[in-house]
Image 1 (cartoon, helix red, strand yellow):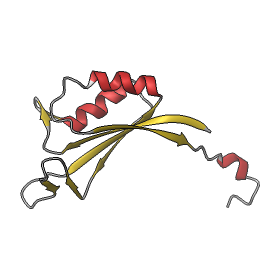
Image 2 (spheres, rainbow, N blue to C red):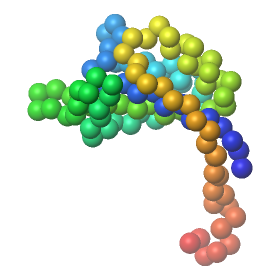
Image 3 (cartoon, rainbow, N blue to C red):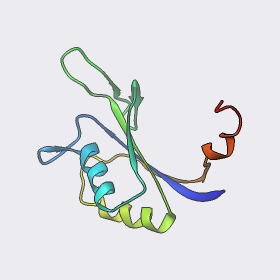
Length: 113
């Protein structure tokens, strides 16, 4: 059992920093920082502090996006500091998570099922 932290960064598809989408920049920065990995998740509907409903429209995409990153506390807190220059970042949360590793080799003697 390994305890790590999960960073969630909330933004939306239409958030840009210069000519780049904010969620793409965050994922790229996570890679460059050699964090354990980043997953970008697109929400069906999202409602934030402004009460504006973010969803897919016929002519444009305005969905909420969540970037999830798992790593140790110190590395994630340093990463959060590196995001301060980005406009368009919404809520960020940091919580403890337990990493579960499934060992496929341990079950190999069971007919492979």
